[in-house]
Length: 127
Image 1 (cartoon, one colour):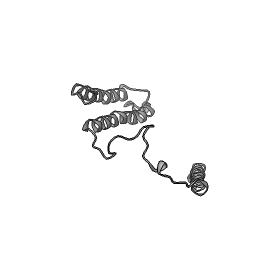
Image 2 (cartoon, rainbow, N blue to C red):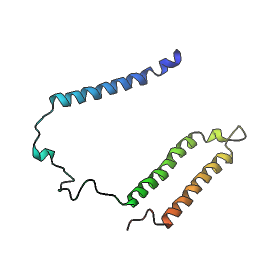
Image 3 (cartoon, one colour):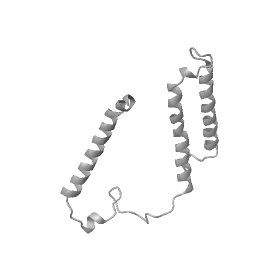
């Protein structure tokens, strides 16, 4: 039961945050202006009239860049826990060995080879 009491402050903070969010949403709906006009309902895009249909097709290159960004961005999600656990990756049990460092260098080298490949194939270059 004592371990649950450690989570009480975080739980209360979450409950209060959700309560404030709900309160402000209800206040905006209840108190906010409700004058709907044709000008307010018209589509607006960066200060200029929209050109073409919003349901137009995107180039495949857009999706390639988006996926490549995710792949190379996820590497930071793997590097952070590695950095936190770097000392405990030692194979000898005490101090820091080369195992943890070599492990991450292999991971980074695979990513560098992948980056070189997509760069060579011009998957991330803009025309």
